[in-house]
Length: 245
Image 1 (tube, rainbow, N blue to C red):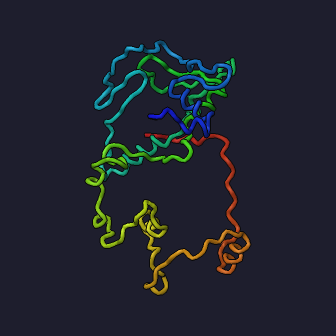
Image 2 (image 1 turned 180 degrees about the vertical axis):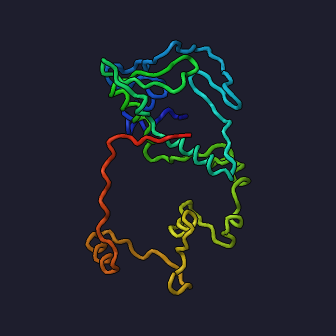
Image 3 (image 1 turned 45 degrees about the horizontal axis):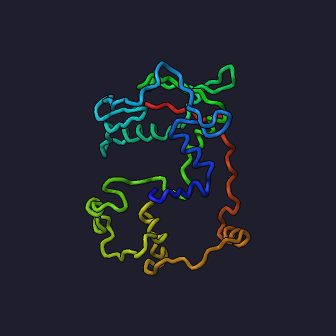
């Protein structure tokens, strides 16, 4: 950002153009390239709009909203499930997407925006463009931490559990950020993959990686395991409907 160089523009110019147009509520491709997304409703807001409190710990300004009132206690697993269902819902509701007489797609909102907008009108190409802007960037982490959990925060060491609290007291910490495969399996799935299951004394380590299909098939058949992968399930014709509380 300081040098003005954006590697995404060099590697994927079409994706960079799509993202830039999406945050500006404009169209990147097609006959209406550079124009604003067509809104439906009474008002369109104003440039001098002041932040407005919409609820406890909630604010809205110029079409953007910040909601910091939802809290999930550690013991309320039902509330956590409801929150995950809400955040994992589909990007587009097919029940509120309709086609008008001109062939455009009209998406109506469940609640009007603060400026009176009740929906938007997009051509099929424009809809695909907006969906493409939701695809995560290549070679980037899908989970990003901020504040005291940020990688370079000076407070990160004060809030993270110590090796003794994690049950790894006495273990040698690796000098690189890449953890061994056995340690990752133990941390994520609780599997003990560093000790031999037969003698209970020796340590397991990777001695070879087999990539030849014929060799893998012979080994699996010798162990009387399935050597043919299961068939891939066909794609669904329509998005499954989910009911949210």
